[in-house]
Image 1 (cartoon, rainbow, N blue to C red):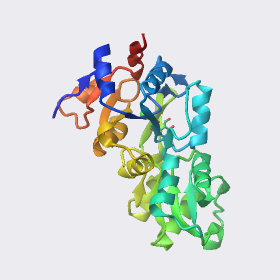
Image 2: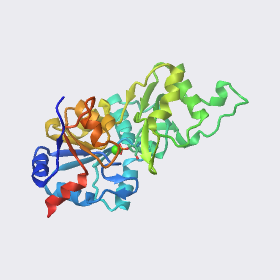
Image 3: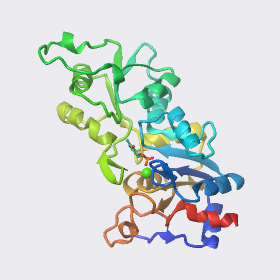
Length: 301
Ligand code: PLP
Ligand code: CA
């Protein structure tokens, strides 16, 4: 397997940037770490804009809608324009509307939070669940207690900090009692880094449903899965050869780029370390890697 090319000086950076017109940029670990902007990132983004590059910020975090991400960019004083954000909650709503062509007389049952419901709303997709389902009454195991909505035609599961048994019971019964009911996940990340540690992510929320149903979801959005890229390609008319995915995680970002025949740049400011790609048994190898995307800011001087 070929070795990744390390970008380490101004001429490396120039040659790399010349190869691509569009950059798909992961957020957490590349642009910011939680609430701290990676040094020189603002300068790099403005350099890319000055060079006429198209930017799309692609995040698996289903907690935020495009509106929620925009607020975060603004709070961190990072320039952002309409149409530049593609989170897994938006990808799910886009997929349901434009690829599944989800019928307007049906609803999506949501295991997740406001990031997902805001995006479904913005795409005109009706929904149930999310914050409305709070507590299961364990003295009553009849279907009446579960209060099934006959209009539900899909279950969409994402990160849900308020996950509870009632949501699982409802999602399971929708899927189990109706073989036509679609089962979608916003993303299947096992973990995400936060507060200097690692926590269970969106993929873990769906695991009990998969166990109970004895089957996998019909569609998983989120990197590294193809449906997310299908949505992006359809919306932006991308030329994969002139597009590069920039990310900090091999199993999501870099694999996403490889699966879509995009260029790939790994940054070492997040999850992956240099040894992960240089090891003899390394499986997922980017085209390029760099200590930090912020290093490219030297081209400004
Ligand atoms: N899922 C959750 C719940 C998260 O909070 C995060 C990062 O903060 C992610 C996934 C990964 O997001 P990204 O694709 O921007 O690294
Ligand atoms: Ca990341």
